[in-house]
Image (cartoon, rainbow, N blue to C red; front, side, top):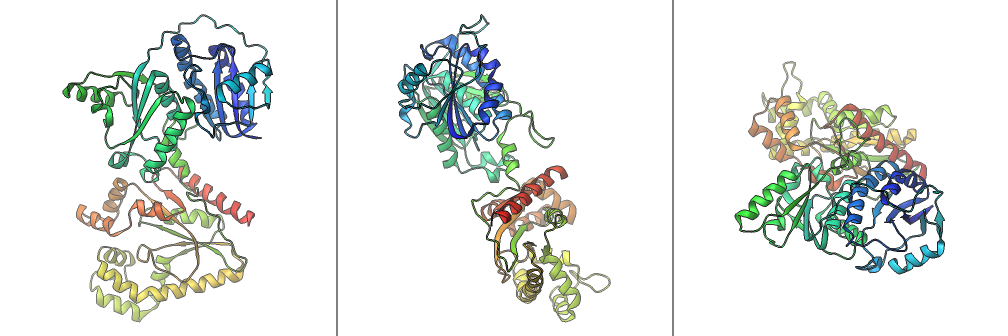
Length: 517
């Protein structure tokens, strides 16, 4: 298995692309990390970006290639190299290298010479593909001259770079003859995105986009900049000639041109490309290749590089946090069904209140007529909500009951330790978040929900006014705080099947780490 390889394909691009599925399927079994693909119709006459017909053929081939890669090379970072030989070699990136050359071309000497000349790299590990049917001459087809522009621009979120992004960026690279400007969204513009709390930091996204562009074509001048609206540099830089958009963002491109006209600038040429369909998407996921789907697949998977420390004499404890109504109970029940014991802090406190008459009496004195049921017992849900919305009352109750809850938790923990239980999930109470229960916590998990859904759910369930709902939400940690602290995130926004997928990923993670320790 090679970490990195170059797939060098010679012959007419249209014919090569007809066999690209076969090439990628075979290569996927040989490459673990990254696969560079270079299409060279004539190896002895390397591709030139001045060849407009050649650019047209390459532009048509790229979406097909990345589409196939999405289904055949799911765990390999595929990158189609686009730089023309006359501009610069690919050696501008010092880390650019590969362990093997996989090719359909006959003649190892020609290949070695080509690679050394164009990459400044010597690789003698050449693997010949079984490909005897590819003709060497391009067949007639209705390709057109591909128009290029000095300065091209495009924008996007570019979270966790995927093959849809690569098509968009590659088309922009082909369109640009001198410079490419890329705007990367940051700030409030992100908050409309699904699971925006999981979007990578702007610095990371800019770095990844820049690295990709410099690898696929080091001949261009790149500016990768943060943008806080749909316009970015398009309404301040009069030299932008072309704006690359998708069928979904074409309206945004038209808005850009309207603003440019208002500022006395010339309109940019809008170059529209299609998004790539995700043929393996679930009913809850988008039909196109998207970062939103990639973020959904992160749910239930560890976000941080950590290795749980399982001890033989005590269980590994996971603290599970989140708002009331965020699905913690359902998610915890799925783990319980898989054999992982669940300790619920709210249930423990409620049981204590039912048994301890003195404690109950003190609470009813502090909250007269506010949380008392008709039978004289305490309505725990009302008590919890009263305390969450009033910090003074919350602090009072915590001081009163925290030690009792800690003691009860520790007693149950000792029982599980003696029984040899490996893992315990402690479902935290919103009342006690941040407090030390005297039990070693191995890692934290959290359930989140988008604020609009959260607001609607709280208002409907508790019959709250808008003001009461906002008051409760503001009293609790934000989704961003949960994401920052947690190793695994869950979200109860979608169907039961999608939630179960999250649980399955987390359960597999636990089991795999237990086996490895």
